[in-house]
Image (cartoon, rainbow, N blue to C red; front, side, top):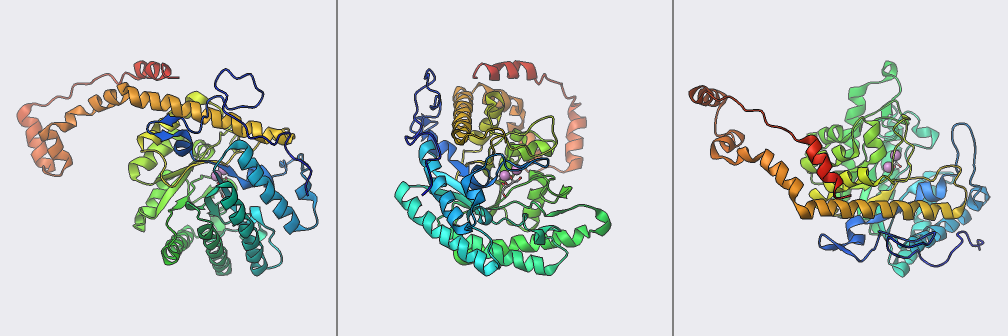
Length: 438
Ligand code: XLS
Ligand code: NI
Ligand code: NI
């Protein structure tokens, strides 16, 4: 038995915006209806195993600052069981319904893939009981194919076909476990699917490998009757210098070249979006427009550093723009908001984990409420609709619908003496309007 980890045993409660408590929800009120759905269903929060329970606070210049008991135990399976207990305790305290994991987060590798699979399955059986008892759900599972040195030159895109085959075996098992646990999605983040130098790399070959692997995964999903989508998580670089799943547009090219838009969607992470030189809301809006919006890894990158700092998202005005795009896309179906976020390495008190999640859940709730107000009010949508309004005129629709050829359009322009009249984009006026909802 582990000594009590957090300072409290009572779940954190909603106390409203004026609460004076040190730890309470001020905005996240799970049963409050927002745009026809309770907040808990609009937000679908998930706690991430890896940042919450696996990362010990290391950075390139220093070691373990957290000194968690389970990182210093000789018996790996005993440590894994302790982490499982703690995950469900964390979910209960936070009132969060979902969790996410990599296979390697939940169980030790052992000495062979066979041993690893058995370890993963054993912990999954513990999950099964705890999920049923606490009404908790799995948002997604994923395979860690980036930590072990065998993956240093890539996973499915490794020059060595033995690694490709090994990955197939690892993913097969992780998909089986995710399905058995009723996972809503299966995620693929290609941390090592990229290259360090072109001098030793055959890009064309590696892209073919990546596509074949994705096809195999989708085929297997159908074979076992896994209902949820496969979610690819784009990221431009880190750990590799250049990653093949650079951003939403790049991933869409892969998915659509295979005709897999129905089975494969994207899981968008704020920090990855800004590393790719985009805004978070850009990536969401683009995925929605392309019909591949799946889920979110909610976190916050630092604008001054060029890496994945994975901080807890707290910036309400920025997040409002992201939630506006999520709501415009119709909200989540299978996806949700996975806290792919870690406390800073100086945040060594166990309760810092609770404060981080509660603060960010409140920020998400505020952003959701502000975005819902923008939608309910309808002013912004009306401005945009009006801006594109002329496309509704039959002659203009005809161009989009392919009813006019280039030369016919040209003839019409000349016959009418058409001269486009520039109109204001009203950016500042609209930005001011958006601020009235915050
Ligand atoms: C790393 C990724 C990773 C994925 C899951 O940058 O965000 O944590 O979300 O493999
Ligand atoms: Ni992520
Ligand atoms: Ni990340």
